[in-house]
Amino acid sequence: MAATDAFIGLGSNMADPSAQLAGAVARLAALPDTELVAQSAFYSSRPVGPQDQPDFVNGAAWLRTELTPLELLDQLQAIERAHGRKRIRHWGPRTLDLDLLLYGNETINSERLTVPHAELANRDFVLQPLLDLDPERVLPDGRSLADLRQQCPDNNLQKLNPVARAPFPSG
Image (tube, rainbow, N blue to C red; front, side, top):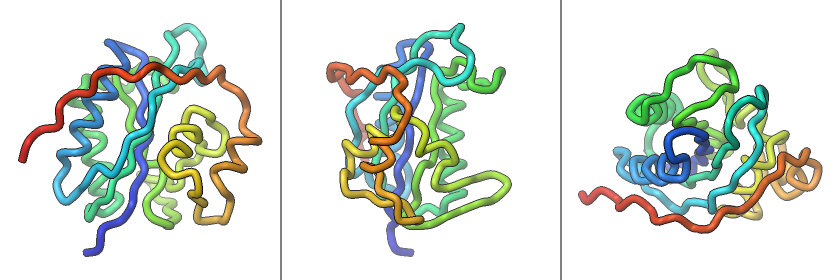
């Protein structure tokens, strides 16, 4: 199987969010049949939904993978669980949220997975990290990320200073 470019959204607002994201990137780099191409800067933003929770730290990772979309989704959910993710409240606080934002140029609408991510165009904390990784990226429907970012509502996005990254596992 040929490798496919996949873009993963990263988010956390609990238990040292920047460290959660750095740890997730290291785990993504260690996925089978997958290469980490790049990771974006991290950004802080207000929560979407309930405001009675801490601000989020968000970013994105660019993978080149031979995993199918559902195999990749299963791996993402396993990483979330390893980071203590519990799905208690919709749009509530979380230790780690990993979203499969884009998978090649595919459009997927299944019971388990929607790609491109359904809210991608409405979230500056998703669009800006994607633009950091690939400023020329166009969605399968022809819309450019740059154009979407210009039209996106502001969520008080702030670029964070770089943090020490977790070391990549060897092998």
